[in-house]
Amino acid sequence: MIIRRRLAVGGVALGIALLAACSASPGTLDEVAEVIGGPARTTSVSTSPVAAEPGPRTVSLVMGGDLLWHNTVWFSAAEDHARTGRGTRYDLDPTFARLAPLIERADVAICHEEVPFAAPGQHPRSYPVFAAPREFAPWIASMGWDACTTASNHSWDQGYDGVVETADLLEANGIPHVGTFRSPAERRRPVILTTDDGVRIGVVAATYSLNGFVTPEDQWWAVSQLTETRDDLLEQAARARAAGADIVVAHVHWGTEYDHLPNADQVALAEALTASPDVDVVLGEHAHVVQPITRVHGKWVVYGLGNMVAQNEVERPDAYEGITVDLGFTERPDGRWVVTRAAYVPTQWNHYAPGHPIRIVDATGAHLASVRSAVDGVGGNRGLVEERLPR
Image 1 (cartoon, one colour):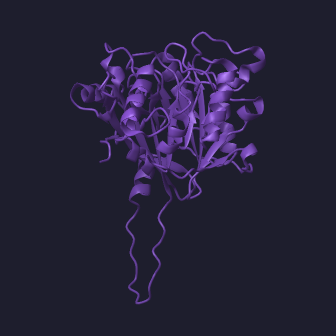
Image 2 (image 1 turned 180 degrees about the vertical axis):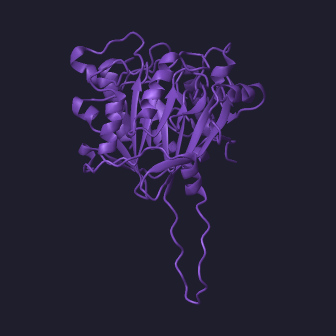
Image 3 (image 1 turned 135 degrees about the horizontal axis):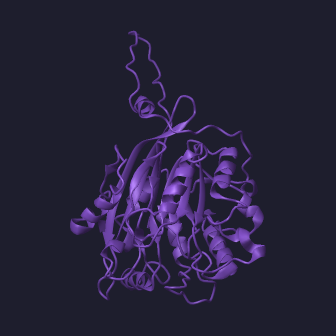
């Protein structure tokens, strides 16, 4: 089990002071090249020791697909617990063992906790109305994620009580959450993660749907939804930037299930988000299959990360694959941050059967071909690198 240091978290209630907003428009490809390489330098010979000139600050950000806790994922973790004795009832470490080093080495790692947690004493529930085992929350912390987005079509599966329970449980385990809220005041507070080098990363999130559930009028603020006009995603991003975020990540639960191509709404929203100076990168989920990675207005858009783990219908082999993106940002001399490295790691996993617990591994064969085809679905991703899981 990996125990990872927690990042500092900004927000009015969590102790951050509002700072002056800073520009974060994307650099041109020439500007990116300048950050990576820079002009050649000449120096005079000196017999005195000279301190090395510090390079620009960098930060790595990792995010993977949906954590969709179908009951067969619990069964697999329970079988591993019976074998290893780790955990109180479940052991997820063997399932995620190959992914753990990738999460651990990132400066900032963000998960998508798609479903709410069960209340104390409540039995976990699976599809279609989820309540994930409570034991999974401390495991998320031990795995090394620094924050989780929680806005999804399942956010209201357990109503407002589920929103509160999920936020409380994540918070109790040191994990900030983004996209669902216990109060209007919490919704207005931007979540900003601060690295050891002082880099401030703001995260905003929203979902396209609540699967037919409707939040009460007096609790409209409890889930960030794309249908709202009172407080849209761009306003959230602007608040994060005004609160001092150097980099702002917009996470969107959107798209058409099992469709590898973005729909018209996704394309339109990606255009709007990337046109804003307050958004630096757009990461998407929901389709349960991988969707394209591309640039829009010079900024990276990942339309769909697929699943990180799930147990969809076996007739959908492409729902048993996903990608984890690893983005490297570099600070320019003028204080702006640009993506100077963009990589993705294709993964796959097996359908659970007794005696065959789930294991996430490198995608190979037909799964790898499927992921590559989806990633390149709309082009525009020159410079994107495919990587494998660390060994």
